[in-house]
Length: 233
Image 1 (cartoon, rainbow, N blue to C red):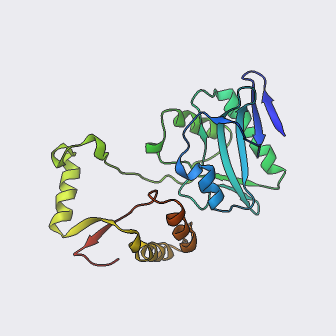
Image 2 (cartoon, helix red, strand yellow):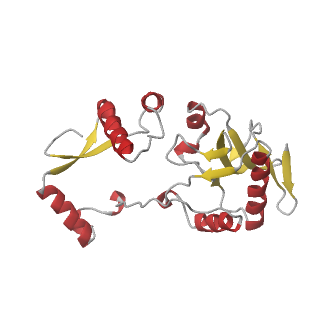
Image 3 (cartoon, rainbow, N blue to C red):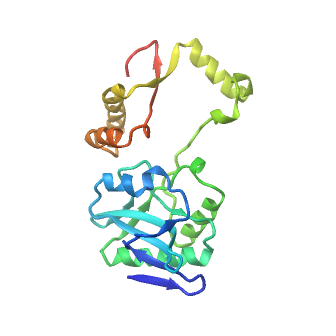
């Protein structure tokens, strides 16, 4: 079943057959069909904005339902919207109302969307968040993300003075950054699991699933650590 936005001539669909369709954007790894299928969500509820004439995908979002909750997506660092930036505000509003109605018919009472960090997005993300806010969505958690683009620097002298101070302090106190091999996965996962347990939280992906993902998607995961005096976690 679909819904047609007359003004834009785009149609909205739930779990359509996308054979022969071209995606107009480059989805993040966690929103690719291959990764999502690997997570074995049951049910998987996918909603799309399509141009059925040109056979093009303009936007998509995936959910899974747990009781009265719909999550996008619980086994990944994030889910959220993937889209072409040409979509206008009215189309977005109609699309949000479309999947809300579909989810409501499945007895969903609360929708939780985890969007990707800002570094993965462009300026159109702010507009989309404004639209969601206008549709009664609330930002409940905002994670702080700090990063240094290694592609934009040639050495420590190009770092901000504060970043240089933190870097040198870490070296002075014998903290060492290390790119680990995949063999470190059991140790690292156990460390993360203990940290989460101290906060009465759980890791959002099981050890069995993350181990499988390392094997199925070689090169997509890298383990990095900061150790003190070469100690284990």
